[in-house]
Length: 395
Image (cartoon, rainbow, N blue to C red; front, top):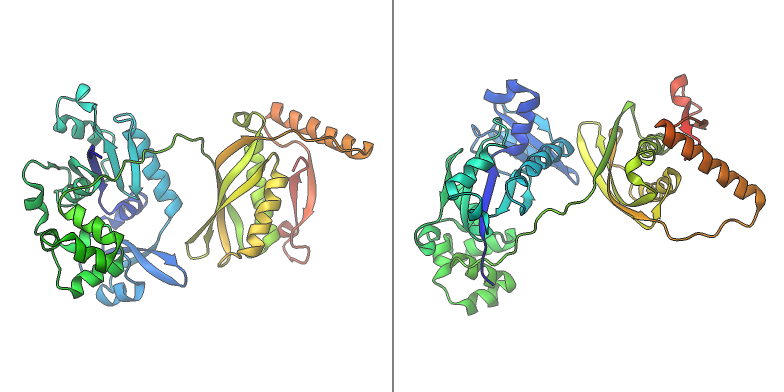
């Protein structure tokens, strides 16, 4: 398979730059952005002024090397929201855009010569849509691996296009640039293989015997062969809602009430047009800014908030949240139409269903919930506002 010409765009230290947007005072101060992985807090990003740090190290290790750095808890939903808006702008320049990771994107350039006269014109067009707060590096080559290496070894604001020998460019680069497992990288070091050039001169057989399929992958990449396809972003409808809770809570009932409130906003949208939810992601911000997210799929489309909440409740009971919740949100990425359903045999139930349908029609016309019911939350609470809540009756 022939490799396609690809532009890699690297937005250096993307999470930290997102934090600087919110707090400009961080610009000239050492800072470390951390996120929770299980019971540990690991480094997600750090200031360029602290080169002793690296991604994935523990917070304790980071503080031992740079004790004066300010610790920031990662706000991953916000980072992705900012990055997705940038990717949307990229799609105005190239129809093939892949989001590899936060701050890293690949753009397919095949056929773009009909629009842009040369590589520099393409890069300048992409630069125009990148906010000034982000420092971008660009690399152009045939294949994602080469374009990424070119971008990562390029000064901010500049671009590199591979013009000479691939083997000459790769031979002195370190093995930790290979997209393979940490175990394989460690094994390469134990064998005394520290550069890509050292791997390229080896025969394929020994690499296969020691590393299996990753051995073949390493051998091909170090020789400049990369047929990894580009995976463009899927154009799908995304509905997002979020809410900051009045007070942190561990109460499942309070959390479900907040989720119901968010879903009630969704189901009055005209864009649903009789469709139900087939896939959504529930995310929460835990006290201390730890981020937690879970994707939920539905066998049959959930045509109302009550059906969706029932499924979400099952998930939360089997996967308890890791701490007190202060903010939560939903991201709906799958919508579908319901299959035919037989009406209930009993007259009273049919009447209730008809009433609920009438209420939904009323809410659709008026643009929001109109009829509510009182639901107990924490009846024992000394704070009146926390004892009960109003929930749309159509839920």
